Length: 453
Image 1 (cartoon, one colour):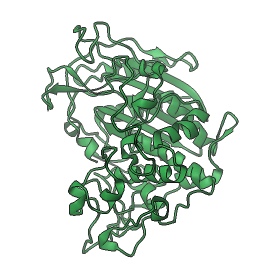
Image 2 (cartoon, helix red, strand yellow):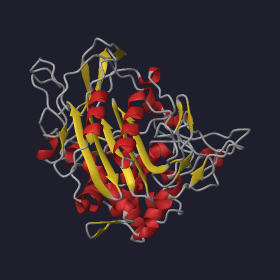
Image 3 (cartoon, helix red, strand yellow):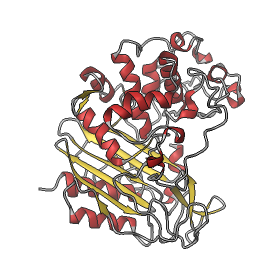
């Protein structure tokens, strides 16, 4: 995944003591282990928030480091003399975990009979969408959600609000006009829609636009009304939808270095969400935007800002087969469709790009973790293996996040790292495709909170 190759950074960071949410029992062994990961002199993290669910109940929540790093340079963007510690209310831009939440919004429409996963998306968008190399094969929402649509990110996946997604999909914009957004035929494998898996952010920009075309609501506003608010989740998919209280708790995402080059002695450099407590000015063209024309700018692929506690509520809802605190968010059938594999890697036939051995099975907006392991490859999330699960990972702007649970045992973990201090390409895991700090974090959460006696 390209996001795994993002340039990040290195030096020590002033670390605050962890803040444990009062609602979760203390776990000194886990807390000290996570603190040590954050304050590792060789590879510190700017911030880390984590939550553990065991048997469907939250058993641990901890927050470490600084969501706004203390630099001693007051007045400089992203800096503070004292820094700010993360806590239960801290919102992170959760990157691709957003896709899982976007899928919930789509499945709400399936439950309502407004969206057919296997219908041609052109019937919702109002124009024909075809891979020109496979012109007779319709593109469906199911294909978008399980990354078998034959769309690719090579022509971009985030377009300005005034850009018509119709022009993008029909190859009239930028590199898309050169066919870069579509898979081409291959001699040894079938890359036609519905057949070949390739992880693609653009899929979810299209899903968001389909949602808008059906509801006639802007994607971020629809998600606020239909998913986040009913579940009692703070945050939103765009800065414009964040309440003032939320803005005050957003974590800045960081990388370390200078001039976009890794520098172990460089400062923590803000990459995104450096709001400094001020509500962002709405983007130009927002008032004139027509829902259903181009939702890529509203974050369906990666823009969700929420807390680990908020994602914990999403996880509990899925564990409960669609309900939370008396609210029916999804039908059991919709949850089952999300979590069951829709695509599996075939070792005897090239039917997908596993992304450095990281992706071996996919549901609707969810990854199935099947416990494949090897040096710097695979999807294993416990050092000694033996566990499988479902969920999603996120990587962007210095953030690395995870959302993984077992639907049968109702055990799961959520975490968000606000910034790492070393090049992830040079710090790959010992038994997975994750970074070394992700391996340490995941292993600690499962061993010391999920599996402990």
